Amino acid sequence: MEKVSFSQGLIFRKSWDFMKKQGVTMTGLYLAFMVVSVILSFISGKDITSGRYIIGSLLSVILSWGFGMGFSKLILNIFDGIEPEMDVFLSIWSRAWTYFKLLIVIWGVMIICGVIAFVIVDMTMDISSVISGLISPIGYLVLGAFVVFLGWFLFRISFAGLIILDTDLGTMEALRRSWRITKGHVWKLVFLSFLILGLNILGFLAFIIGVFFTLVMSQFAYTIAYRVLWALYQEKESLEIESAVEDNDIEPVL
Image (cartoon, rainbow, N blue to C red; front, side, top):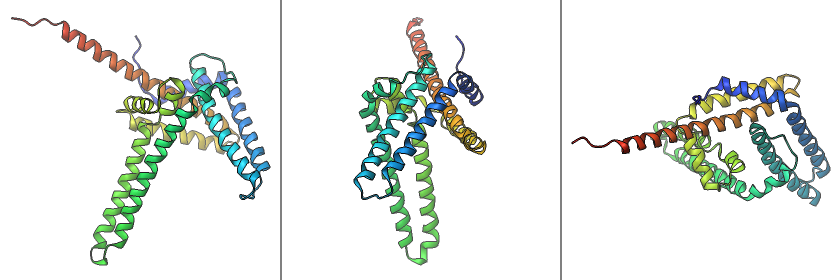
């Protein structure tokens, strides 16, 4: 059995292979979504108090949400050798409520961390000038620690959305699976994220339109990273089970 490894170079090479096969179709689909979004925004107008604007904004949110889920599912299907079919954008709504609960959890954590960080900084500002020279830097260090913690937390649960679309797992089960498969791989994911960011900057510089191509390739890279980490986790679990079975088969020597 071929050993699985997390390699940024391999991930990008595989992404490029998928782009050569389905890149035009997926980039065209992404562009079509952007065109519809622009038209919807134009129809909604700029008067935020009008019913037209409210309805248009609501439709825009639903469209973006549904397209994001459907597009990610199409990428997963392509990875599994399934040709892109537009009915995915209808069937994917069966997972919408589970996906929505995931967003609530993520935003809840972000808001709580933000409030705590704000309170800490605000408290340091109220400290008397006699000790503020010491307390203020400590407060900002704590704020920085919260930012680092939040980033680390988001990387640990970053694949929960894909897991929900890829499996029948619920919100908490998807979060737990993402937490398990990303254990020990956070720095690799950080590096991969910087590479993806660089790729999209290059795409933007390539007459701007190139960014749509690189965004699709980024989604392929993100999906491949998820499948690689899941394979690594399964491999580890399999080895642990085999080791446990072998240990149980050893008979005590008298």
